[in-house]
Image (tube, rainbow, N blue to C red; front, side, top):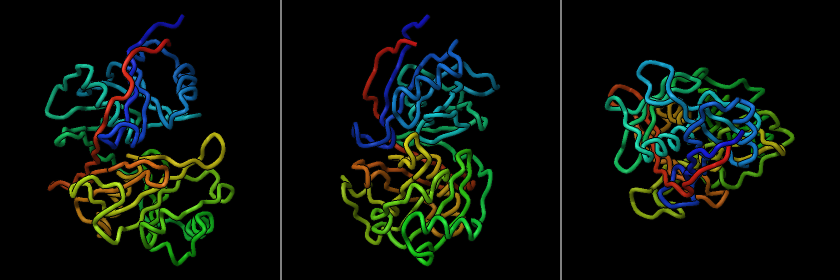
Length: 289
C-alpha cells in the first residue's frame, strides 16, 4: 500500500529556478522495490529520479539509487548534486569534512564550494582515443566533417560517454544530430568559446570557456540532456589531462534547450577533479509511493 514520503524536485546546475536540469528526489526510499522506483522514474518524465536510503558502507552518510527512464544508473552527476542538496536541506549532517554518498560506483565525496556543492569526479572506467570507425560514425551523425572533430576520447565513468571536441561553441550549438545514425550511443560534444562573455551570463564569474551538449538514447529515439554532471566530469578529466583545458573553468550547457546550466570545474593540488554547481528546490512536499 502506498504511503506519503518526503519529496523534493530540485533544479541543478543553476541558482535560478527552471534554467537547469530538474531532478525528482524521494527522500525516503526504504521498502520500495526496484520495479516501483523505475515505474515512478518513468512517470516523472524527467531525465533522472533518485531515492535516498540508509548507507550500507562504512563512512557513507547516505545511499542513493539513481534511475533514468528505462534503467538504473551506477552514477550520474546532476542527481549526485541534487540529492546532496536535498539531503542537506532536510537536515542531513555529514560525519566528516565532506559529505560521502554511496551509489553504484562506490563512495563519492562532495564538498561545499561557496554557495555551490561539488563532487569529486569518479575514476574513468575507460579512457583513451575512440576507434576511428566510431569517430567517422559520430561525425556523420552530428552532420559535420570528420576534420571538424579536433579531438576525441572515451569518457566512460558509469555512463558510457564518447567525447568529441569540435572547432567552436557556435558549431556545437548549430548541431542537428541524426537519431538514426547515433542510435544507441551516448555522445558528449564540447566546443571552445572564442570570447569570454556568453549569452545569458549574469556576471563576470559566469563567463564560460566551453559549450557542452549531451545526446543519449531516449524513449523516443535520441534525447538531449539539459545539463550533465557525469559527462562534464569525464570531459574535465580528459580535457585537463590532455592540456586542452585549464585546471579551472566554467562550462555552459543547455543553451540549445533554452536553459542556462553552469558547471564549475576545478582540479586541486592533488590532481583530483571537482565538478560543482548551484541547486535550488522548486517543489517541496510529499509523494504517495
